[in-house]
Length: 255
Image (cartoon, rainbow, N blue to C red; front, side, top):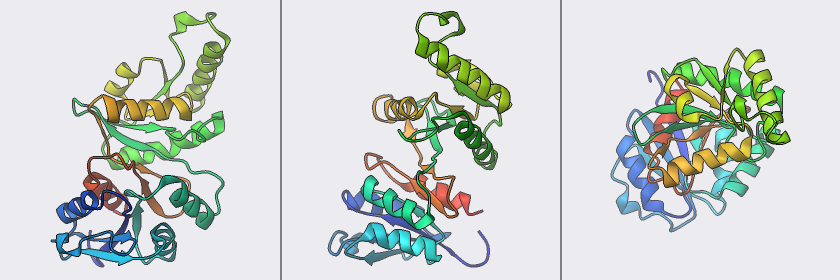
């Protein structure tokens, strides 16, 4: 980044040292502002001059307020609680739900975008088409394939076995046709080889793919940018091993 040094906020609740270690590692081209309650962070562990600590009785609200006011240029949830932080973000941005696109990496080093990843996201054809449009822009920014793969609940040969599977495949065919994408059926293992963006059948299955890959399959979740708000906010899991990649992801979205 050139010109003014950017400021990226990140929240801390539990596992404070994990967040501080991540910030120490990647800060420099940008300033990392850590939001936490008083006494949560041992300030002696802040080893990078580009890492700042903001103590506040309600760090979730402080992070969102500073993001919306422009006092930080982007924000990462870090280890703050999901419900209260995302509720504050929705209220501040005036939206009823959040649309997230997760940057994932398999254990073999293959990166791809996955959406929807929240149980209340991507349930309709128009919502999926909007996610495709926004996801293509992120894929381009990260140098991923522009090809989009739409998943469904089975193979085409499974038609007739169950009405929900049939409906899933019919919707995937429609989304693929309208979104200039490819219906990859249920074959996610093939889809990630050629597609930079994967569209899950719904937010439940997308969330399961994310959790299985990152918590059971040895893969990595680098963060999930929220794409239906005016500011840059990267959602993260409190179970993430570190937040260095999420901070770098937020920084790259500022370019």
